[in-house]
Image (tube, rainbow, N blue to C red):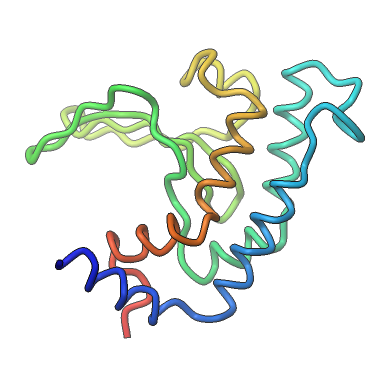
Length: 158
């Protein structure tokens, strides 16, 4: 019951501009065909690079981030978490676009690494490719998913 109440509150707190932005971003990336157009003749690494550039230069993603910091959009498998801390690797969107956040509470380590095909492969292995990045953006901008995140992280407090 509490989760439903938090979601209803979150839904009301989200500004209409944010709803419009997530709808526009979701529409744009859902229509993106990674096998045609500008992506047709590219190998996987080139597709990833082009998609990273698109995300980094996307004014609507930038605006959404300025209204409510986006942060983590994907977590590497098997991060260790506990009430005392943990470690892990996250794919994030921030002020400068797509980046990797590698953290370890036990060593007080936090590194932000620019997302490139090479760094994505190093930190996520074969798990991350252009299609996966596109799917992660679509999941983040799915309205129900977005509302849940707003509720979970108490964003847009009045």
